[in-house]
Image 1: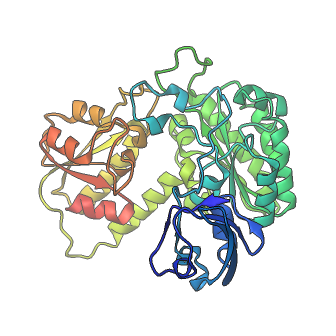
Image 2: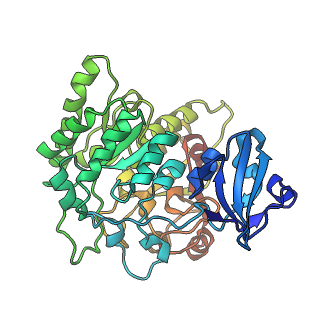
Length: 435
């Protein structure tokens, strides 16, 4: 049962007498607990809904749903999920939230582990916080794919890594989902000397048992900040260790490919950058299941950028100005390649690529998405430029351009005293550079 916060005027629900303060109990005989129930059962063309009024009286309303869109019913709830977010119950040794400095906005300290956010927004869940009702619902509704943070298939090691006594037994949910034919994308956050090496080989082999339901496995290096006092002793990957992870993934995939199957496991782009190896071609990544995990992100951006440059019409021009492209350490070499592509086509282009070192979180954090406004300002102040292009990924969203340290896009531009632009995908990035 979920309380209704608002009813759209003259909507089907409004015309059936449903009002703010009433509670939705069920749709077509199915109990409603949250947004997943509502969006699944509320998509039927005709919905027989049971309500409880604010005064406690039970009543019924039958409404027709337009185009299978439950929003057309006209019911609004106090939050998108229709109840509170489910927080993480684990104490993972590599948790990034535990490595955040004090004094940042409260939302950055919330650890979500919500299956609904996995379905709706692609978030990863650990399975440790799922109730039996939620597991059965996942199977009944057959909503896919489910994105799962596995980290290791060794139950005992998973308990140790995740600081949760249920972490090992919750791996059985993967089996249940696979038997129900539900597609899964999985990730292994690898920590040197802990869940790589033989443990990585074991995890890959065990997850393969659940293919094709398990459709991808992303191997991602642990991210560490300088704020680790009192936390489990971890370190970043050395080049030879990163190369060993890539080799292990390739060795795992080899017999699958020989037998005509599709590549199942992928090493994140960051492993290639650490190892100093060239990124694979687009064919390596298949359907790019793991872009959000940094798997194939750089290959896709490179190919899109290159194609956009090659497709420029003969009359295209570079707007003459001193242009600086700011980027994180991990993507510095790629941005140099982009700048060279433009200069090859437009020899008059004045482009400088500036590597921004992450002093805020520590130099072990190299991705552009974790750059802060303070670091940008400190390292770009006084740079000779008419325009600076900064990574779009460092802002909360396009509509809410705020950095992790709560600096706004306009505030950064004012502090630098230079025109600021944001990098995007391949074609839009090229157009931004050309001006």
